[in-house]
Length: 220
Image (cartoon, rainbow, N blue to C red; front, top):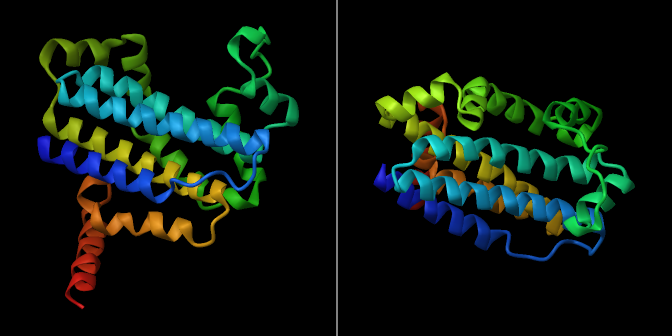
């Protein structure tokens, strides 16, 4: 676990370094979307910090926050109306109600209407299917959460939580690359898959293929 967390931290640093560019313009929509994506990455860092401290149950609860922040960032860019964007861009003391903002399920329902999201939606649905009811349990102190707190958190499960969090961070990195408007920056983000394949949640066949491609590239 310690090695995975160290490598995951390096992945995060490489990701942030790659997308460290301003938004393509200063529109309220782009800036709000960027802020939500960066918040998603902040949650991922907090998740790793909690895992390192042996607080796995709290870390799992943060994955839901990470997922929802990323989904919100995509929704802001492609689906939110101008009033919703304005609401999310105002300071809390402005006193505006957030009742007009959709919850997670409604945001996901809006995505199929956006052609640009054809490739992203299956990833989000797959990630949501990764024990979503269990994630809710950790947020609301349900039976699975209390069981893990009482009996301990299995290391293989903790490893998968960190890896799936890294998967989500990669999606956030690709989204931030889009927001910069820099051509081919997404490809630079995707190249990190090769270097940090061991930190990501792939099926083993895909992982071996990625690692083999990385080694082949290093030998040429």
